[in-house]
Amino acid sequence: DIVVTQSPDSLAVSLGERATITCRSSQSVLYTSNNKNYLAWYQQKPGQPPRLLIYWASTRESGVPDRFSGSGSGTDFTLTINSLQAEDVATYYCQQYYGNPPPGPTFGGGTKVEIK
Amino acid sequence: EVQLVQSGAEVKKSGESLRISCKASGYNFDTYWIAWVRQMPGKGLEWMGNIYPGDSETRYSASFQGQVTMSADKSISTAYLHWSSLKASDTAMYFCARPRSFDSTGYYSYWGQGTLVTVSS
Image (cartoon, rainbow over the protein chains, first blue to last red):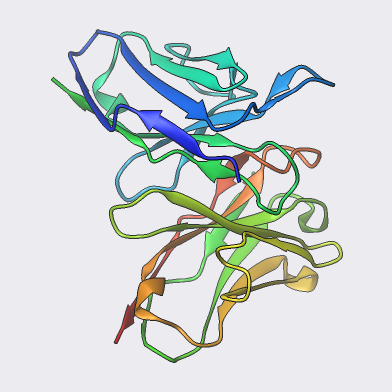
């Protein structure tokens, strides 16, 4: 199974500053036949379901503010939140979806972003 | 508008059976996989498996194979997650989720609101 590891576990950032979360997969999630990275990012606020932010490692979901961006390829990925807003306080998860299940998609452990 | 509406919170005892539901609307239920995701208290997200309502094909994560059963009723656009004998360790929030597009099965744009299952020993 592909193991996905996020860092840090938590992060405190001042309003208006940048937050950077990293995600590493235990094997490449780049499918060479279509040159796509099978990696997504979600935001989850307390008491709510996750919200898809980014898919294919860097494609922003409709309606997601452009201060959220994803980058990386292969096994190493980054979610960047530029100019952090109060409403961005949440836990962020990366998820790989390479290959058909089983074993299926796997999520990182999450990164909690707070205001400093 | 795509919506996934889950059944309400449940409080059960160990050994009891349970079925929770996820009712879909706003799209052709038959042609999109529905996944189930577990979130234990204070913990992260775990993919349990998915079901294709068109033919009820199911795929389970190894961790959940044999522990739960997924099913779907096309006539009422509803997916189900069933336990035959609950354990205290099944206490968690359970989400259903639908992929962004019919040809993409792995990442999820649409989520139910979650069903909290509490199992006492």
